[in-house]
Length: 363
Image (tube, rainbow, N blue to C red; front, side, top):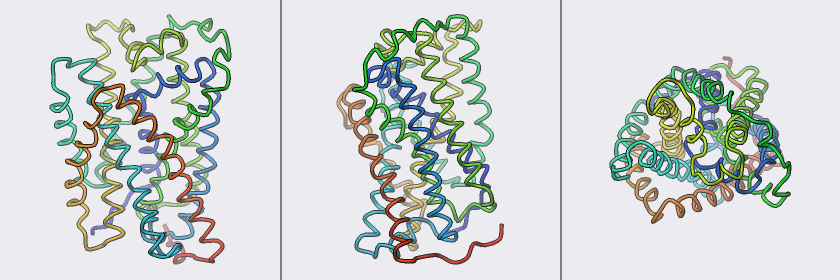
């Protein structure tokens, strides 16, 4: 398998995309439902938690600088425990990719193409994702590097365009839902932050590993700030009591921005599709990459392409959108344990068993 070489900047930029692509998924409606005006607290807590986990993840990766988690976990735990743990870790990315595929397809048929079968939209997305898998890591991160400034401009434009209608009164009454939904919001937001754990699979591919902890922590903080800004934009524009009635409340915000174009929200959707495509392609690629790393004789591209029809089957299994949203929320709550548990426990086991990889190569 040809080694793909990327820079730490490319790796960290795609982490921002993976987190902020939440705009295409209905998590903000859940935040408003569970925590209302107080969701900013668990979002901030999830961001801080993400920074801590990232430092632990990088500590683990630095112990095995020339190997990925899929290669050293079986050495640390032994093959009986190691391989199942890695497969579980990879399965999280795969299932998140499948549900992201469902969410993006639902988004388009709800907002732009109401008469189009969801299978048609999903097929187009799968073809794009297949192209991303064939482009491999270098191709995905380079596309993201070009598209991310446009995605960030879309967020900024949405905020500036909605600014005249923002009202601080929509934050009142504070803590109107109490603390009951805080844990749910933290779990979902935290799971989105855990996209950064993908670095355990690509760490050997990064050519300039110096100062990656400090820069990575800033990256997580920036992604968390964007997530918080989107949430506040929705609350200040719609108010929680109104925003919770929409599956994609941020779409409602953009629909009501006067930018001089009919169906101006389509502009934002086109821009943010770049982020959605990048995230889905990356997650399916990571699944295939991990399998190829565990079993070197298996072709990465074959695993990636063969996994797409199964992912589509998983994505269309929920009978309707409410069922899909419930399944998606449950996945995030359960996956947080795996995303945090696998690397943290592996780091602890590596330290206790004094396992360490080869010395770090010079960048």
